[in-house]
Image 1 (tube, rainbow, N blue to C red):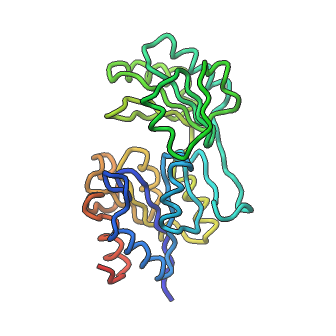
Image 2: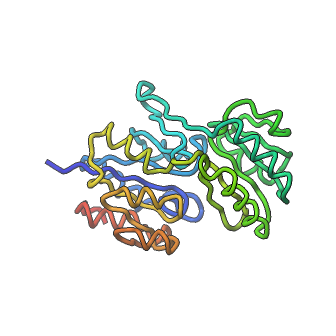
Image 3: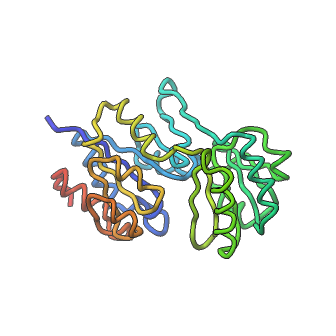
Length: 272
């Protein structure tokens, strides 16, 4: 009887190659792992609407972690429940208000799969259009009609620190923030205390798999808690140093089938 493991996959820079596809080799090994009795799930910072295509491509039957833990649900099982932990509406509006004291290009609020843009912005629209969300454009202080799952402040690299410092000074207790680098300089905000690890814990409870038998793969700072939580926290070869430093192991890059090579070896799948 195989000891069942839960394999948790970040998407961008991890499961996905740079062209945003899953390689045939990786897909094949994941399939072999599932045939051997292991569970596979996605844990991403993306909303569900732009990760659903990969969930379907891998034909998964597990819960999925979206928005870095702010939304966790089971696409195939309505009775599993929706774990949605949005920002407080008042905090969201205060953030928009305060942003006007700084230099920024736009603010995007996402309420699950609905998108709210502070200003009309064709370039950003192309990014957020994946999955055909309902889009509302207009001053978020007026148009935001529900507590946002996540907020993004798009600014220039020169202003990231300033805005970030303000958010820390005023809202440190209630928000968790991180910055994106190229090509867009963005500050991403979700409710404090959330991480992919929270969603992973819920999945472990549901699947009755102890965290010692969780194999998690990631490459960025939003994967840190998940890799620390997992019995096998694995950094991608292309991951940032911070991730490699806390990981139990480092595998090859997302372009070199790092996930496939690691799983094939660890779980003795003989798939490569």
